[in-house]
Amino acid sequence: MSDFNEQVIADFEATKGKPGGYFKNAPVLLLHSRGARTGIERTLPLMYLPGDGGSWFIFASKGGHANNPDWFHNLKANPDAAVSVGDGTTISRVPVTARIVEGDERDRVYARQADLFPQFADYEKKTDRTIPVIELLPA
Image (cartoon, rainbow, N blue to C red; front, side):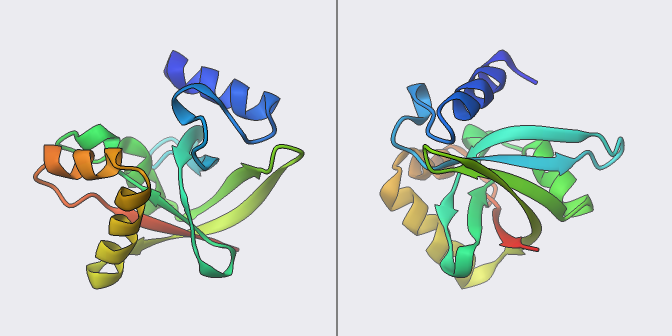
């Protein structure tokens, strides 16, 4: 895990889900997923968009790189995962099931995220791939 991610996770835990720095004023969750080959649990901080009915949308943007992030491949192989979410007072760990969002629904959700956080529009411009959108549904 990168030093950046380790620091964000530590900050997330210390602030009960409200990290500062790069993620100040952004909704952040910790994704706990299993490696596709190893089965080892990995934890990553990710920005999210709240969905209807208590779900969370996450975006495999990888900063606009040409390929998808490893965690996306892990979720495709092992869609049963967990998220940690906090409100500044407590952190809850919630089991989830990942669903890849496609077509018009994907486009609407991504556009909403890009409107709220313009860096997502920049990521889309930097790559030729369609950035995957994943809905994490409470299990």
